[in-house]
Length: 83
Image 1: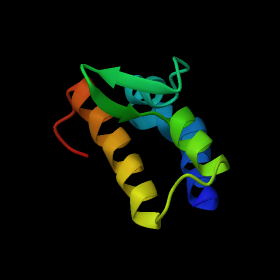
Image 2: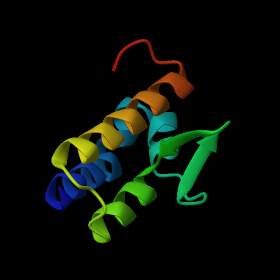
Image 3: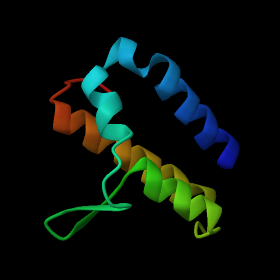
Image 4: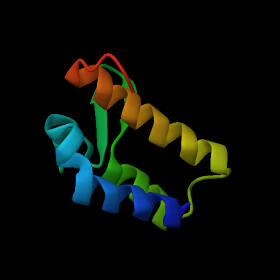
């Protein structure tokens, strides 16, 4: 999971601005490690990285779900019609 996450970070850092500058800013935001919209948990890259470092993911699917949820929220926030 750490390798996959590192590759995602490198891709966003290197090429993210080419396809979605606003999306890149949202994914890399440096607010608190937990973002909350209402009472809904919204993972960001820092929170996911912290959970990886602390081995808080019980399964790979928990990690995948957080990454997908983060990406989907960022896409919706920017108003992009396609993933």
